Amino acid sequence: MRGRISPRGEVSREDVVRLEEGAVAFRLVRVRRRRSIQLRVHPDGALEVRGPWRCTLTDARSAIRQHAGWLRSTVERVRAAAAARPALTDGTWLPLLDDVVTLRLAAGARATVRREGAEIRVSGPDLGESSVRAALTGWYRREARRRLPARLWELAAPLGLAPAHIAIRGQRTRWGSCSSRGTVSLNWRLLLVPEELADYVLVHELCHLRHLSHSRAFWAMVAAAIPDWAERRSRLRTLQGSLPL
Image 1 (cartoon, helix red, strand yellow):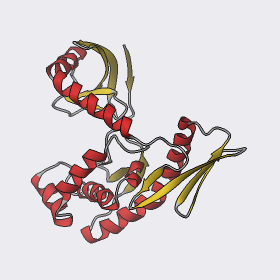
Image 2: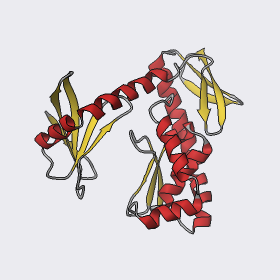
Image 3: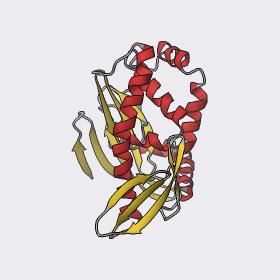
Image 4: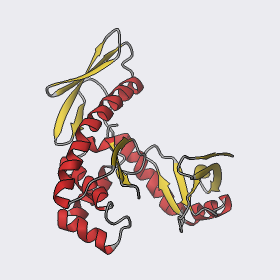
């Protein structure tokens, strides 16, 4: 069993639990001020158990066994979504908000990524799947730093809100988050979904600047800005796990 402490004060432990289908590895993350246990299956199939500060490995194993049926179906769905992801080969179509760009691969002395019109050109000495994925991830991250903060400020103005800081990250399970200090963190993968879905996430996090919890007042504020927020959230959930990056 291994453990680590995150900068946010979370403590994690890794262990396994025995189910009918065999041993299942999981990571227990204990979070200050958390009241209940939540199971999460990441897009890569990894299982995470998030629990209160006093949550034990025994508590985590019990929760997993209690929800074994849900876990099996969720893992199957995640694996099916992963299998449906397009291979990163020459000619693959990649989403870029409301645009679609074509991936072009070419051998080269050094690794480069650039967009030329409706194409993203990746060149380098290694054009294997992992190398192409890493190159595209870097490009999308840089593009997100350029696009997402600007769009966030556009949406913030009519709401009368102003984030203290904007961060672009690669969260494994969240599209975005907002801290009590006014920092809005956005997942660079928002560039892989339609713009109206990305806008929902941005407005959602902006509304947390005024209401940190998911209270009635919070959802009323979201609904005033985006009346069809529930439909957009549902579409986001169907996309998560099947994105090409």
